[in-house]
Length: 448
Image (cartoon, rainbow, N blue to C red; front, side, top):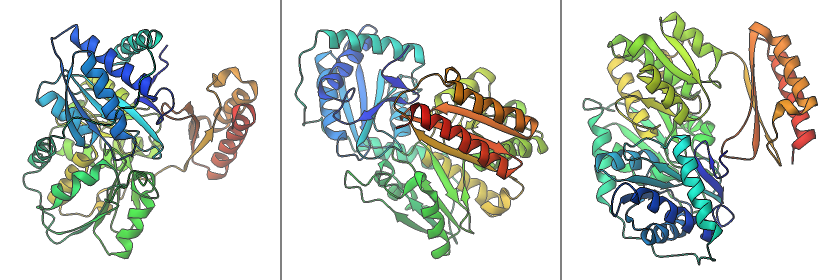
């Protein structure tokens, strides 16, 4: 069973295990040696977000990679999907992103991509993890490094060209768009990307200082861009998370538009052009029942994967689906990207709106969302919930009472010490009652 890797790489408080200097160095050393078994002097691409810890983690990781026989190219501050794209395009043996995505600035993480640009499967991560522990067993303390390789600015420019090529006819003329970069990686790309598309583009939260990433901005707080759309009388708002692998939106009325609505809009557009393979979309257990109903009215089926865009992608590959994603804004377009890409999603959504001649609100007007609540409970340990009698009983009671009129999804976060309680039901009072009851039981038994 994996001990380091979660649903999206390794993530922790920067400077603390497993993101202390010694372990970070061991991660680089282990990865280089595993890659070196396949090719001599493997080339690795490295990118990062804007956290103040990203640079020393990059330098320490690079030192380990170099000691293990790998060469490193540093793309500097750049989005996660950009690293995936460039890794595949230029034949790197692996791509590494130093980012904790939507987490607060004190956290950081290490995400890995294979030479095909896809996130590594669990089996490969487990093999790397075992090698890391072998290295740590004989390791001496490693001093934090501070000098990373020179940044290759051409990488960012190439990624922008790739994105623009996906929407050759897109024009924002006559529109005012508000873009929230979350003081994260999108800050280094979005201004250049949107500068030549016409219209009036208002870039916000694009002044990172190492500690303001995701702070009351970005995809964690979509209400911020939604309010700006209203106050600035804009046509649409777009907001990214810290590493820009996901995007959320706001329509012209200042209403938040999440990943479920994006999936509906994109699925119908692809279907109308004969590009929605098997008339099927892959979502997750967290997607609203209203999405499933709206897709069904359009003759489109919906499959549910486990939470995590890598698991959505696995099911897309297995079924040949052209589109998949999460309510949180990770959207994957098969053939265009190998991972969730917030900037690409934003451009493709803008393109659908442009070609349709309709507003975002009009395109998703028939999406009737079931009342849904998600409660996050901080936990001190992740014990199997079915093994905690009071929690199991509360879950069973909710499942019995809601039956065919709702859904109950209780799971641990793969990246944080949280239990997520999601209840969806036609009856909002019942929904809130059961969500509060289950959350209280978890808090009492294993909460902080």
